[in-house]
Length: 394
Image 1 (cartoon, rainbow, N blue to C red):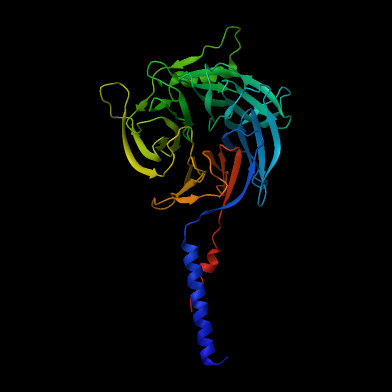
Image 2 (tube, rainbow, N blue to C red; image 1 turned 60 degrees about the vertical axis):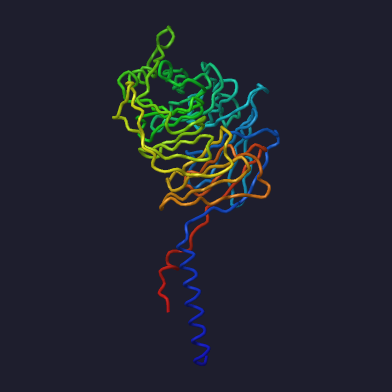
């Protein structure tokens, strides 16, 4: 090479490395991978990844729509149906799904799914046998959400249209605790969540309120312990908790249809085109005996989401929040850095309401379900190797 050509090659190489470094510094995003459509032609209301799946196996998730539970496996570039269960009652409409560990009649503990919806029954379905293991009855109306206890796999929480929450023991198959009553919700309970240390339960509903219930009181601990050992012929003495430790109607002015813990903070969403991050103050009381003061920290705003029963998701590694709207778009906020405008994920065929979004356990796959019976998958785009960005420029 002569001197002119060599200088030109060096400049081009330096320019290429600068471009690569700039791309490496960009925040990680998600790219569309695939979609699938179920044949029942009804909205899919719920989706949940299997948290017990071995990391070496492909991620698995379940969806619920109509009276059907469908289980998918995520391969390299698609989602494939591997199992399906239809409820014997054709009038059933499942709204929510939760993965659980359950003991079968043979004494075998296996991964199953708990599903519930319109009829107010909780079905625990064996995916190995594709049949209903048992049914939990007792809710006075439809069930809108199920949540598994973070430290005890036998405890399941339900949020119901009968204005209450119920705690169930899956091992002994009985309702042990009811949250609701005098100072409980005044309308349908739409969502619930445990904190990671299992100290509190959050709930929200159509009465525009968010409430916090304690699991640390002696009577709650005693009734949970008793639920494992109770053998009397008399009905189990279900504990009723009428008073939450916190409750507020100051965050939202409409139905609150989704609530999640975010460390010691709360993320809640209403039909107001935003998700609000706030902190409850349990020490400040006003006229009532129940604390109701809170501090709003941030609002994640987005558009075209003024209908209810649209649930957002927080990634398991707590670096992203995702929510869908009623015209088929998914908004993704990177919260590993300073909050900023969301990335908008869309597809030309995705045009109906996104009812729920869910992340895989390793936070690399995001799945959304919609009103047109469709399942949509996005995968996290990987950054270039750090070694590439650490090379010295010439």
